[in-house]
Length: 317
Image (cartoon, rainbow, N blue to C red; front, side, top):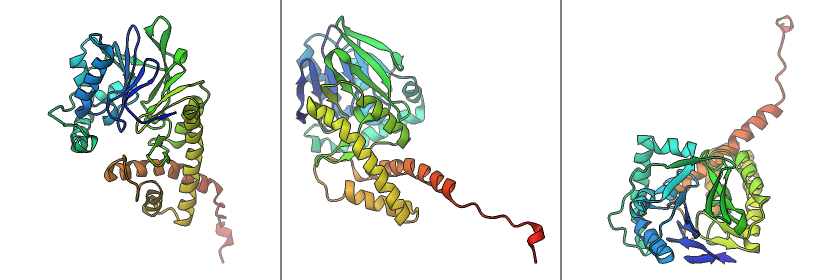
């Protein structure tokens, strides 16, 4: 089932906030949040967490990566739930220590607050603030939610270098966010390879080997049952289509990236309605995604170019 409504999506698993930028809560002896969304949604997240947990507090907040729309309410949630520990990769923790990065995350959250009306939310005065990371995680680490529920960490770079996915094998649950393709409301799946296409694809291949029943994505919807497995397979297939489309356009446009971007944007963004990235953000991400393919395409072309025959000085006439 494709789930695009806030609420319980599987036994003890809840999608919170707004489907455009959801966070997830898995209940247990030590409840766990996954991601911290946007700053202006902090009060919404906190209210919905209390509706599920009552007087209990989340023990963990596992961040997938350091992008502004996945860590925005972390500080707010820590003030509301002081027992909660924030966990992320060491690479992400290093980013959160950089003043320039914190300033950028703040600015992007301020810009996002302008969309609050579209979300049906009063933005209030909640803004992004820096926060402390309580623990870092790496491939193979495990965190206990209950004696019979364990969060396992997988390093899945490609969207960013600091990316972690999380699994709870006992629930057959995967929190992948943008380690897999990101859907739009038409069903089109965007390949979110912002830093490296091949590594992103390899990460998706790893995730495709998992036995899952519940899939938590970063935007628009989550999936259960056969739709969860279908989304993983379609993410891989769409990734290959995206690469082929970009490589074909690079050939026909003779490597002129703005022309390639225009044609890809016509497929992915132009003319679509409903939930979607603001155009400036989409264009910025599109350029990064295309460039991950351009680098390999250029290297391949250079490798296959016929070597120029060098003329000896004795050949001169």
